[in-house]
Image 1 (cartoon, helix red, strand yellow):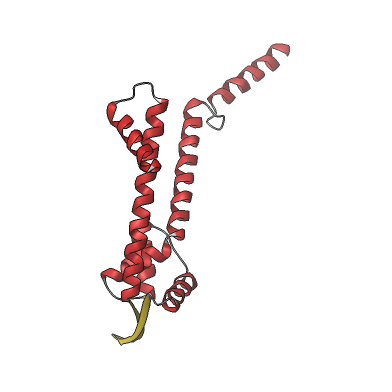
Image 2 (spheres, rainbow, N blue to C red; image 1 turned 90 degrees about the vertical axis):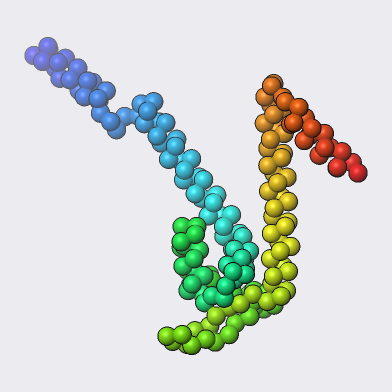
Length: 170
């Protein structure tokens, strides 16, 4: 009887070691990758939502669109679904600031089409330029920081750091 109980315990241990629900190194790695992907997607969605006015103005700089077309293009371009109220609230705000104007258009049915104004184009250009400068600064700082941590610093990273330091002092 005692041997039978020991055999049952050993079988149970063997079964648990083969059970895929218990984490091992491979499954822990996969969980880590899933979390990283999830975090990356979460960050991406936040950035897109924060830059939504810029994205919409950029779409409208290419062609006049109705709210539904804008919503569809955001979904197709970025994989993010935004509700109708979010899009139309943003369009109303952009219109209030003078960046877009709407016109009623009859296609198959009557619809409101939004177009970029001259001040909207100017705002878009200035904002794009500012975002590009910020992104470039972040990329340069990232390269500098990664090179200073790494003992194998090459001349180019030192030059970048030196130039940045000089431009800050001027």
